[in-house]
Image (cartoon, rainbow, N blue to C red; front, top):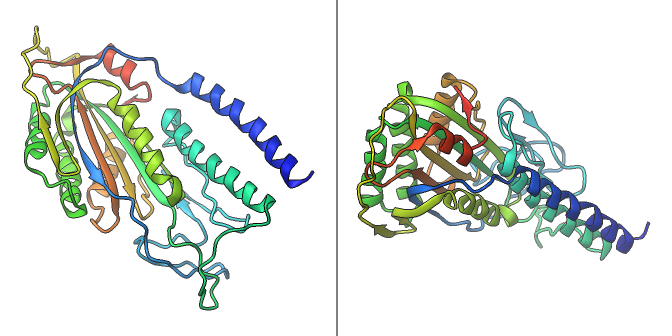
Length: 326
């Protein structure tokens, strides 16, 4: 089969699969509550890094050795490669997958299609002009993207207050400020383990070229679950809107708040998952310990944000269908 026919066949196979998968896993719109958001970041290019093709691990500005396109998930390390360029396979969460895994997969498929086109046109993976005898790869390596969602009893008002306070004062225009937001957010969640009820965690790696678009899609998916954003601090820009007090009150036993963390990192994130409280605690600690130099982008999204608003158990599970009871 010639290169052109191969490209056509690949396209015909991939597109229907992606459409069908999206129809199956995309959640139905839920009745949304107001929410808040803190985030920012920059997917800037990393310095070129020589890579030995002898199988040894390389360390560079990513903060960890990927050793030929290795990646890490919730429970083991895997090795990629074999096609003459760093090809990364997605990790479908800690036993889940859902839309997160689908978006990671789309990023991988896009890179694969472009690679096949490059091979068909006589091109190949782009090497640095001066490889120094090592066969240097392109400047940017794989990016790890992790998402943790937590459903907490609505009595966890301190968490909302902490997030609201950070939104009003944090500097989200630089990586140091974002790292402080990440650390403070994980600490706020770790202080209330008695209020954890549901959780879900997923992590995957994508090539640098598709990392920003994948991260943005995940962010848009979570933001679309909010009726409106009453509080926001993103990229150094702040916004706050006063809400009216919602009718009713929380019983504390069947009402919830939801917090979502989305993190993009230059290095692997060997999270232990969210299958139980101990694993969730370890995963939050791992994210909170991420250094500013490794943090590429961050989104902290929570709902509800309006005074007196809560999520019923049905609303929570409808909006976050991948949540698992701890």
